[in-house]
Every structure is written in structure tokens, then in C-alpha cells.
Image (cartoon, rainbow, N blue to C red; front, top):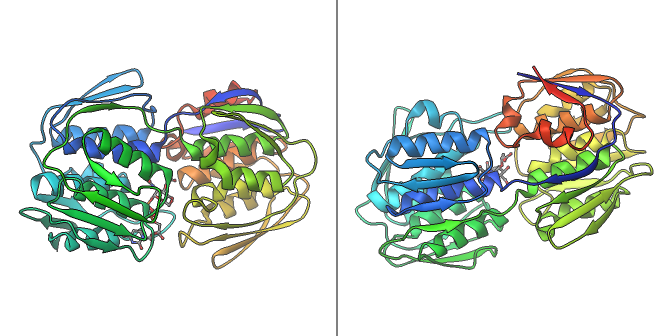
Length: 413
Ligand code: EPZ
């Protein structure tokens, strides 16, 4: 599929942010921790949610969808998530913790790398092994077994989001208490902990770098509404600033976006904060800024491509260093095709602002790079065609409709 974008528009009006993809995915994995009914509200219609629901369905869960509500019932009958679905999405690896914790056995194909890096899982496995799991590799799969997981201390060499989430889910039903040290602090981890606690879990410290999980005998069904998507919200903030527009972003938690709004204000945008909304306007020149991506609460790596597109026509030179992933500059080549002046040196990119970008045919390599190319296309002179926009649909609900409601002229073909 291709997305055709008319350039030189100013975004205005309002947009409603959907629930967070990166909160919903681990929460759907965690529905495996109970046989009772779980109802999730305001679940976004995005491809990754569809994929993980297909996998959980193949394991035995019945899933009813009513508009943006998902109802999970039924029991798990199969402990080997299907390869052809797992390989579509790295987050499938989040099924390992709950399956191991409840059933003591799981076979899962090793997640491949992807466009942004080789994406190891050693820290996930370190956590499971610390809790007594026997880990084997066979034919591209990892096979984990444990009669009963026993709580333990796990130190994460790196505050990995996925490893923190997987270990929380494994520890929730383990015997005894688990401590995760140097845990990731992301809001999506707090949301997962809140969800499991609502099921009767005993998790404390989520959102800090030491998380304590007291194992319980079982977890019950519940209802839950995940947090808004801070990366989707950040993407729209940057799109409005990039087009020198003025708009309101509704359904946000402002504190989750602090690093993004701080950088946008540094670049000259004006942002007003309400309790669940942000209003942004940019009228003058874009001032260049220095950015280093870091684990939360630092500037998110998932916003790096989008802010690079915005800075590519700033009045000066910006520097971005990508400290989280080893290869997350695939969007640079595509921005160069639109007339940007960017030089990458290892993990840093030097962005010399040009007067304006020119529309071109460009390719989305991952969902955030795709979002960056949409932002570039909205601001560029002329028309831009973004190909392979299936990547974008993985994590942005109705992005063309939402932008067209704000004055954009985008259509798919
Ligand atoms: C989550 O991925 C997000 N995905 C990513 O969002 C996000 O970019 C990333 O966190 C960082 O914030 C979901 O939540 C579904 P990590 P995850 O484990 O869990 C190293 C998007 O665009 N590492 O924190 O895979 C790894 O190499 C996606 O929505 C190990 O060394 O991220 C990387 O350099 C892209 N060993 C760093 O940690 C491990 O066992 C960050 O990875 C695990 C990770």
C-alpha cells in the first residue's frame, strides 16, 4: 500500500490519541495469567494488536471484539505459539513469561532482528533462569521448562522494557518474591503492573528501578483501560509543529511526554498543558537542538525519527545521538531523498537544516520511520508518496483519517 501526501499544509483542530500499543501488547499477553474473563476497553485497531490476538487465540483463548473492546475467555490448550505469526512481531516474545509462569513449559521461536537492530533476548532468559527455568535452544526455537518458578533477585544489565515486562509476568505466579533491579521505568510497565494488580497480583515499585513481585497462587479476571499512547501523541505534536500549525492533542498524560514537550519548546514551539490534553503552536523559525535518546524518562528512541524529520528544516544544525538501538537511522536515506542535509557518524546524526524539503517517493522501514516520512511529507513542497506503509499501520490507528481531520490531504492507494 502507498500513502500519498500533499505538502505545505498547516495542521489545525484537534486529534484524539488511542491507547498505547506498547501497553496493550504486554497486557494482552498477561491475559494468559488467568482463565477468568478479562475485558479490555479502548483497544486500538492496529495490526500488532491483531497479530498478538491471533496468537493468543491459537493458544486457546476465545476473543470477542466489540468495537474497541476486547473480551478474553477460555483456557490455554497449546504452549507453542505458531511460528508464522510470531515472526511477524518481536513483542510475541512477551508470551514466554506468562506461559512459563502458568504452565511450566513454553516453546517459542527466537524473535528475529529487525530494521532497527538485532534485538537480543538474553536479559529475558537471564530472568527466567534466575527463577529456576531450564532454557534450551533447538531449531531456532527457545524451549523453557520449570516445574514451579521460584522468586529471586534479577539484575538487568540494561533497563530493557521487554525483559522487565516478561519477568514481571513470570514472577506474578511464581513461588516467593522476585526483585527486578535496574528495571525499566517506562509508563507501559506501570500500566502492566496496575493491570496485574487489578487481577490480584502483588507488584510494587513499578516506575522505579527496583520492582518487587510477590508471587500469588492465582489471578482473577478483570476489566481494564490501558494508558494513552505517548509515542502516538508525540508524533502528532511534532506533526503540528513541523507544519507551523496550531492544534489540540486530546487524551494524553502530559507527564509521559515531558522529554518531548521540553525539546519542542526548546525548538521554539509553544505548548499549553491541560490535565488530559496538550495544545501546541509553532509560528517562528525552528531552533536547532541537541537530542540523545535514552530509556524513560529520557527522550524516547521511538520519537527519534520523527524529531529528525522536524529538525531537517530548522534554522541551524542539530545533533541527534541514538543510544538505545544500534541501527535506527534507516529514515536518514529517505529524508536525504527529500532534500535534507544529514550526516550520520556511528550512533550520531548531524542535521544541517535546509530551507524546505521537497516531496519524493520514499519507503517506510519501520513504523516510526514511516511516521517521520509522513511528517516530512506534510511539510515538504509538493507531493510525497510513502511506500510500504503497512509498517505504519502496525502502531498508528487511522493515522490518515486523523491527519485529514486536522486539515491534511492524504490518501491511500
Ligand atoms: C520496547 O521494545 C518497545 N516495544 C520498542 O518500541 C521501544 O523502542 C523499546 O522498548 C525501547 O523503548 C514494545 O514495547 C512492544 P528493550 P523492547 O528491550 O522491549 C537491549 C515501537 O516503535 N536488550 O528496552 O524490545 C536491546 O538490544 C517499538 O513501538 C538487550 O541487550 O526494547 C536494545 O538495545 C520499537 N538484551 C535495548 O536493550 C535483552 O534481553 C532496548 O531494548 C533485551 C534488550
